[in-house]
Image (cartoon, rainbow, N blue to C red; front, top):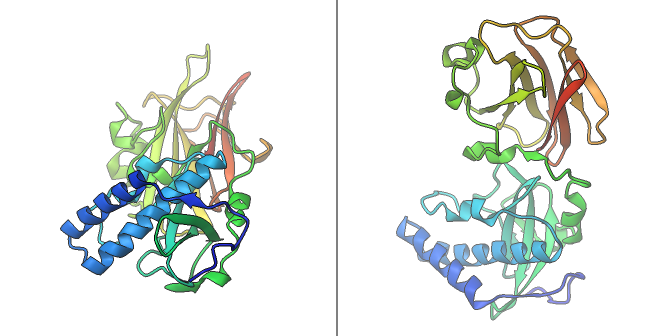
Amino acid sequence: MVDIAMGRTSAVPVTEPMKQVAERVARARRHWGASSQDERHIYFNVLAVLVMESYCRAQQVETDLNASEIWQFGSKTRPADLPIVGWGRVECCAVRDDTVDLSGRRALDRVGYAAVWFSEAGDIARPAGFLDTVSTTTVLLNRWHPIEAFLARLPRSLPSEAIALLPWRNQLFQSGWQTIDSLPDPPWELTYKFRSHLCHSAIEAVKVLHFGNHEESVVMLVGFDTARDRDIDIWTRIYPQQDDRRLPYHLSLQLLDRDRICIMKAQARSTRSVQLEFSGEPGEVFGLKVELNDCSVTETFTL
């Protein structure tokens, strides 16, 4: 059994409401085919998610528990993720001895893994370790970084308006963003026939941008490839909202870093579209700025 004195993190009481939620989820998973042994694993891993959510609240880290995959009872895997707003999903792993079992849980869209230790009675827990990635199905707890590494990995100075891209995988779009299919009268370049060459792992969404008093409105498309969990391919394109128009000559599209410094730029020059392609790492923050004369619109994103 792991010593409860490990690390500097305060213990988190496992409350009755936490236990009741974990029991309901475990029973529901068993109804969908989980074995009795799996049910026990599911119970503690759901508790691990709830403990990490409590820990994050104490650290003023914003989470979105309702978006967790633990509620997907029919899943063939055993997800136990806690979505961190503006960053991504952290897989929460219950520790009952000195080994953490990660069988079937090395998902591509996880930004990290948190180990949560439980007392023998299961009434006290403690966030005990963090890893960015895992390459084996079991990891000894003494190989994990202290849980403080989780706090250190959080995107620093994350803009409050930053749009998290990973939830798009589950069709969870922020205000103003929508699927291409739901856009009324999209430019012909956005039609299914024109874009059918995209790989199945590509996710795209669009938003209509307006420039204050200017009559011009444009459609911003942002897409990324979900096939890799590092060095993620990202692309953005700007189209005229009206199908019979071209982009204004002086319209520009800029890629900004976290500090709002332009690191890539393209100018429309009266073409039908303008685009940028680049790559990023999980947790990275970037901005896309569309500028027309004295007006501009900036959208901030995080992977």
